[in-house]
Every structure is written in structure tokens, then in C-alpha cells.
Image (tube, rainbow, N blue to C red; front, side):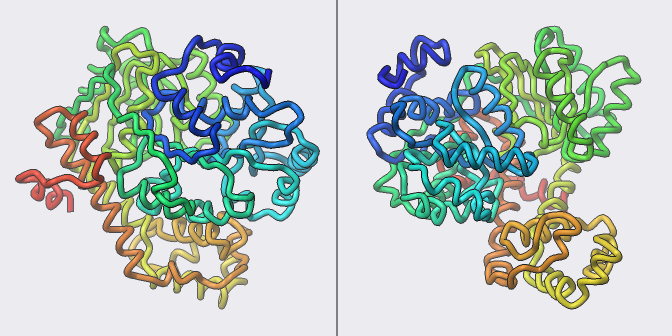
Length: 491
């Protein structure tokens, strides 16, 4: 099959007669050994841009396409889809037991697999690096590339090591893929991966999805919000397809679930507090059509490629334009009219502002946590995270800065893992970044700026798609008159 043209490979493995506009140009560019940044709406076929080059590798060539991907569930779904098509692909991540992981390392070292999905964190493991060392990486694909940038909406410190990772595998041709990257975010991605902007071609397909109808419905309180939601779910124009209703808080999701069941609206729920098996079952039921309505937090959606989602409702305000755009992008992938409704209550801004506080500990908090782990490690192990939280702050037992800080320490390699008991093992000094209040405050300011953009979107009187286009072109927007009152009310 390897002597076939990209179009023939597309027909044979994927059953399509032709590429979408620009897919062919991107693939030709990559196969010529040139770097590319691809900004393309969710569901428009970004993954083909590395899958076709992988299929074009000759049979006797031990080269491999390496895909850096942020989510374990997303890897599983992608690999399942590829293997069903007869494509030799696999993933290595923490979901594997030791025997399965070692078997894949052995197969990798022996020349198996055309496509390998891993997280950047996998490069911390010596045995993985050794297994990969004998293979030539012909293409490095960075999926959800906004994660590379500290200004992206899903910043992960290990993604800042992509430049180092890329160097360790021979500086291969590199493809960065995302649906949500502002101009500033793109420049930061280029810098982080170590490629000058003049050496990487931007393929920007815009963000417009013509079949999506974007509505913002102001509501005063939760009672009005519930009434609006029930009306939306009974709208005959959007029956016959699937619906996702997004929430920020699990407790709000559960309250709405109880009320919907009481009114006879059947559904399933998905959130991070559910056991993994239940989450997987809910996702499978939704994907195969056994259920057509899911209430979910933003933990649901990555890897969801379902064509007939007719409506996405935000029952609570998302924290950023980037998150909002990712989530509405799951609607209408079949090209048919679909509705995206945001039930906007100003009180929801307070929730998101609290999230920003929790996700941005300052340098003093990191220092206190580090000292607690170093000087009182035995007590930390004995009494656990709740005791630690009490030692670090007295304001509220619901203050979640500790969870954020431990996660960040893990990603920087300071502690042995993100959860007990590994998180009590101190492995390295506190890095300068986490002691730099100026840089930490700048990240917090950017998070606040992204939330403020959501307020601007709610107040937009013109075409909201034009608003989104302006935002992703520049990353900043001119404040509208009167919007400061909205933010002040939330404070």
C-alpha cells in the first residue's frame, strides 16, 4: 500500500474519495519534510494530516510517526479507530499494566507500529526513551498544540519540554495541530518547540462553522435557567439527534439532573467524580445512540466524534472563549444545522473567578507547600491532604489551591506523583518558575482576561462568529461600554 498516492491511501483506509480543502496541501507540505502549524475547526479532519504520511512510509522503513496527545481517553479512541481500519497504531500511557507496557516497548523497539500516541510526560521514563531510541521519528505531531503554550487554555508544564523532546528524537519534521490558538499563543508555541516562525508554515482554516447557530440567552437565576433548559430540550426542531448540556460544577449538574428526572426528561450524567468504568459506559452509550442526552462537566467531550449532536447547551458560563469554542465544536459534525445555546447568568462569573483563584497559587503558597512536604513529610503521609490544607490556609476547607499546586509540582518533577502516597515524595527542588510571583501573576491575569472575553461575547450585539474570529486572530478585544459593570457585579 505504501506506493499509493495520498488520495489512494485516503480511499483505501478511510473510504473518502477526496480530501477537504487544504488537507491535501498540508499533507504534501509535511511529506516534503516541512514544518506546519494547522489551526482548523474541531471535527474537520486534522488527524488525517499525520495519518496519511504515516501510511505512506515504505514497508521496509522503520520510521514512525509520533503523536503527542494530552488525554488518555482521546488516545484510546483514536487507536481503536485506526486499528479497526487495519492501521498499525498503538499508545503507551498510565492506563496500561506493567506487562502490557513492556510488551509494547518490545514491539516498538522491534519495528512495530506506524503511529504511536504518548503524552509528553512519557519522556520522563528511561525505559520508554530506550525503546524509542532505535526508531527514526519521521514526523512529530503535536495534537492539541495550544497545550504547549503557557497562554493556551490548557497549559501543562511538560508541554514546555516539547522543544527538548523534539531535539532528543533528532528534530524531525513537526506538525502542530489545534482548533484554538490566538496569534500570541501560536508565537509562543513556535518558541516552545524550537522552530523559528519563518520555518513553519501556518495553515489557518478559520474557525467558522456555518451550520452552527450561536445563541446567548440571559437568565436571572437558576429557576429561570431550568425553565429555559426544559424548553430547549423539548424543541422539536432539534429532536432526533444528540444533546450535550455542559456544567461547571458537579453539584449544579446533580441538582439539574434531579429536576429533569422529576419532569420526565431522561438522560445520563458524566463528571470526574464518577468511577472510570461508569464514565466509559456513559460515553459508550452516548456514542452508540442508546442515550441521546448527557449532562456533563468539561471532562466529557475530548475524543467524542459523533456526527449527529444537534445541540450543545452551556448551562453555566465557560471559563474562556477557547473552552467554549472547543465544546460547541462537538455539535453538527455532519454539516446539518445545529444549535449552541449559552444560558448566561452573571452569578456564574463568580464561580469562574473562584476557579481562577484556585488554579493560580502564588509563590508563597508553593513555598509553604514545599517546606511542609520537606520538613513534615511523616505528618503529611499520616494525616493526608485534608490536614495539609489546614496547615497551608485557614480561609476555607473548599479552597482547592492544594490540588492545583500538587498537580503542578508533579508536572515539574518535584514530587513523585499527582496523588497520595506518591505526592508526598519530594524528588527535586522547587523550580524558579514557581517562585516567580511576576510570572505567576501574569498567568493569573491572562486567565482573568480570557474570562472577561466571555463577558464581552455575552454582550456582543453583532455576529458572534465575527467576534470569535476577531478573538482568535488577535487574542484581545476592545472592551464594550458598560462591560466593566458586569465584571464588578461578579466580584
